[in-house]
Image 1 (cartoon, each protein chain N blue to C red):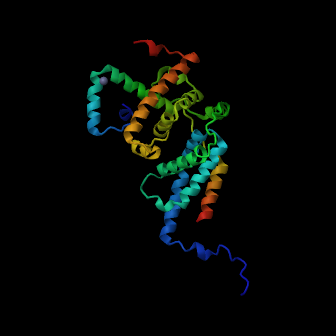
Image 2: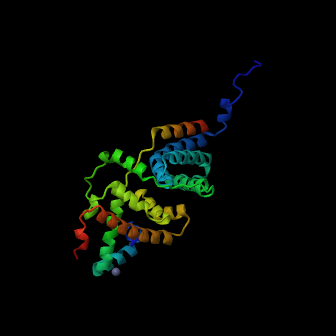
Image 3: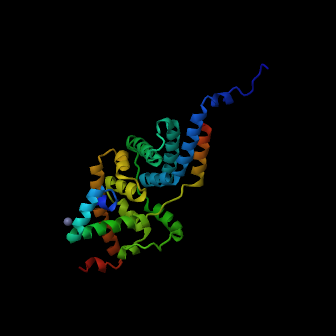
Amino acid sequence: MSAAVDGELTPKEREGFEKHIVKCPSCLSEFKEAQKTKSLIREKIVRFKAPQSLVNSVLKLTDSLF
Amino acid sequence: MTSSPHKKNTPAQKSALSEKEKIKQQEFQEEAVEHINALYNYALHLSMNPDDAHDLVQETYLKAYKFFDSFEKGTNCKAWLFKILKNNYINKFRKNAREPGKVDYDLIKDFYHSIKDTQSDSEDLNAGYFRSLMHDEVYQALNSLPEEFKEVIQLCDIEGFTYEEIANMVESPIGTVRSRLYRGRKLLRSKLNEFAKKYGYNTDNEETP
Ligand SMILES: [Zn+2]
């Protein structure tokens, strides 16, 4: 199920999965719920920008190493 | 000609590196710095503390550059950096028995509120009442999960790593990653339902058959 949501199924597995969910309402609804959860995470978890001071210090650090 | 004022760090020492090595270093440097935001977020998620996150990222780069030779071009640089950061985190906090992860929700909330306005809410998310959940509520729900679930969800859904990359990072078989994702998402859904009810969002569509 997770693999289906994440696009990690092999083509053959995917075919089997797609055949199964049209016949199995409980797997279909579980699949949809899992998809929703994934997209919610993607949409709502805010990404921070690294502070400029950190970017600067990393750049400086790496420059001094080379 | 007797006094040489700049005895230390003569340019000659630096040019000991071959042209080829220099190019490799430069490429690596350019690619690695691209991932600084992702690394910072990961560090923040792990440590829950901006100062620790800052240090973790800095130490990660230091290690990465020291061992850039062991980095194979063409492999996932981001995954490699994440792995270094994770190991560093474990060494720093778990082994020293220093208490990380004291979740400071106020701090996190401040962060969210300061940037919420810049977020686009226009994405088409077919998620019913879940849409009403705020960033910090989703964040809290995610954070309430046991570490092993939280981690794989973060790496998969937020950072977009493949199962194989995640398996390598958490040092577990792919099957384990898969089942943790499955169980973690299930758990997360029930937490989100709890939150949605608690904050009085409309949960009708969940109850209708
Ligand atoms: Zn089924």
